Length: 226
Image (cartoon, rainbow, N blue to C red; front, side):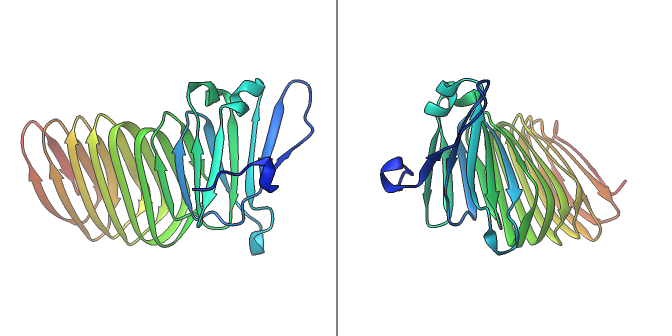
């Protein structure tokens, strides 16, 4: 994967106030985002035609920006950095984002996700995705993480294993598949059908009035269509 560097004219330093440092990266297309840094990440929607697409980061300590690595290839943007990058705030401007994976203790907020299919996964940190508009949504959680979903998707699959939480109560869904394991918590809603599997200490709750197909092994608990 090609790293964006000054040598290839993809990195520009912007003037900033004395209290903050800022850097910018020019990225042509972003459809997939992989986060491997504890930095705070915000994804906003680009203007029509993709104008303004790119990445900007700011921090009060320039060392946080020095520790941040921004790489892009084939529509996939990767943000990397160790603990020193935690103080950075990264803004990604993208016309359409359909895939997000978080592997570090980052807080990722996404203004909108649209497409035939939207995929999200988190092994740490949190993802808060608003204004989802997709035919199908898949959210997978492993470990101590949080995924929050808002919007609409006729079909949704939610899989949680670990000690984290998937909260999809604000996601308008017709057909839901939910699976919980470990100490995970899954909260969702459905209007037509809900297929639920829960094992170990998982807690799964489904609001609405769907037809429920539930398989739960105690002490796991499931509440569906109440």
